Amino acid sequence: MKCRILHESKDRIRVHFYLSHMTCDEADKLENYLIGLSYVREVKVSERTSDATIRYDDTNRDKLISDLSHFDIEEVQLPDSYHSGRQLSHDYQDKMFFHIAKQLFVRLVVPAPLRVIRSVIKSIPYVWNGLKSLARGKLEVSVLDATSILVSILRGDYDTAGNVMFLLEVGDLMDEWTRKKSVDDLARAMSLDVDKVWLVSD
Image (cartoon, rainbow, N blue to C red; front, side, top):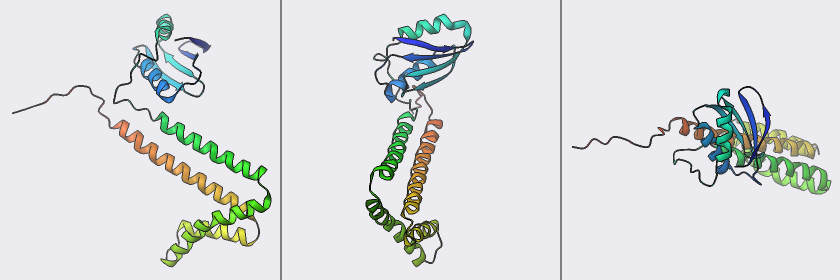
């Protein structure tokens, strides 16, 4: 595969691969291929920049260059047990980016009267959840969230109410991301990663 050395030190090299858009699957293939080389110690592949940072035994520099040049991403197949979690992180990074971009768009483009209506409508689920917690006789986090939002709206501070709801949504997104990534990491850590087993019969 065609690539270019961006930076190089004694036992570390950073390489850019000439791909129009590296997918998560292609990044996994490249990472799996490189980490499988006996003289490679550590690999980090960025699918967004199509770069790979490789730490290796510096006595094998020529061999590394040769292996990189002979690498064909179309021919490499990932083992069934291989799962990096890269796609999950990629998806949630995109979700976070678009969530923040939407908030900036609303603050900079949407007129103030429409932002007021939007804040009031978005506050309804939070206030409702807070009231349900109080009805059960419990003082939960939802009550505190509903109080801060409702007080801001009653005072006419709609921007603060909107910011509180925005931060709560960011927190929920990060919590969901962390929970799924933890489950994914645990599943990969417990994977046996074997191709053959003995079968005892009779």
